[in-house]
Amino acid sequence: MVATRWYPKAFAYTANGEVDWADETTLKVAVMNDPFAFNDAHDTWADVAASDYSSSTGYTAGGEVITTPTVTEIDSAALDARANTTAYLKGDLVRTASDSGRVFICVTAGTSAGSEPGGMATLASGVNITDGTVVWLNVGSALTAFGGDAVSWTGLDTDPTNAAVIYNDDGANEPLVGYVDFETTLNPTGIQLTPPASGYLWIAGGGGI
Image (tube, rainbow, N blue to C red; front, side, top):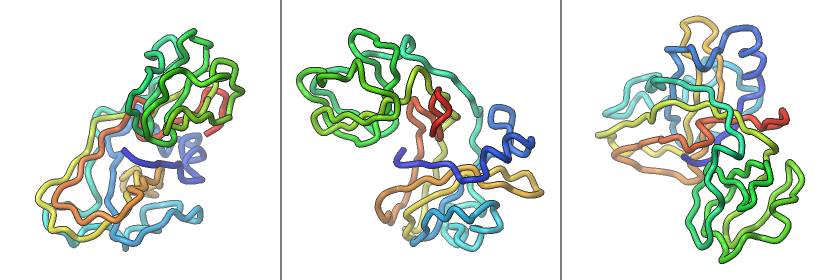
């Protein structure tokens, strides 16, 4: 996975029952034609459907269903301690060696330093800390991960793409939920999106994003 973010109305859609992540059977990931940018005015699939990757060989219009969607609360006790000189990817989760009760998510991929950064165990919630070439964000005492099985496409005809969207293909409003930024332009013959421990999307335990 790469960078993801919630669409602005996703929580309203959840509150009014249009999106129930753990129980939905129609959550989909749809690949977008390049260029495609996040727009906080986008609310539903109708706002982005014209950019769907549907013209590509090997791709079904509207994307693929996220099977076995899950909502999981994760606290520090469930995590491995941060390791020295270790490669981490965006979305990886760790705790401090002393288990300070804080959950850290990798927001910049890289390799950790040879020792735990000073002050990591006492870092305030919502604050970043640099660890070698990794950057961690302290999300507080817990993180809620919105996960599910990986989605993939094979045999694509190499049309360029730079992003995907997550939405609920409910046959009615079809609300947008999340934006996936590939952080580069791909000309792929295959794509696989495998969510990290933090899920396709996540919410910090303190209520922030």
